[in-house]
Image 1 (cartoon, one colour):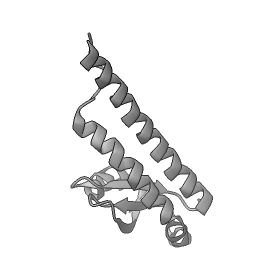
Image 2: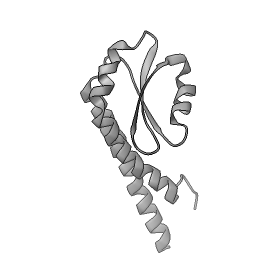
Image 3: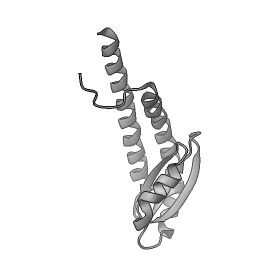
Length: 120
C-alpha cells in the first residue's frame, strides 16, 4: 500500500493545534484589520501566533520578501497568516474559520486512516 501523506501522531497534534490557533487569529481579527490601513504600497500584513498558541503580533512585510519572512516568523513552530489592505474583520474571521475547519478535517482523516491501519 502506498503512503500518501504524513499520518503520524505529530501530524495529528499539529492539525489539532492548528484548529486552536485558527481561533486565536479569529479572536484578534479586529486588531489585525485595524493595522491594515497603515500598510505601505507593495506590502502585506502578516499576523503571527507563536508555538505556545499566543498571538504574538503583526509584521509589515514587503511582498518580494514574503516567502523568506514567513519562514522566519514561523520559526520554532508558529503560524502566520497574510492579509492585504482592504480585508475586513469578517474576511479575517472567515479565513481563520476555514483554516480551523481544514485542520479539523485533517485530524479526523488521520484518525480514520490510523484506525483502518490498526484493523488490518
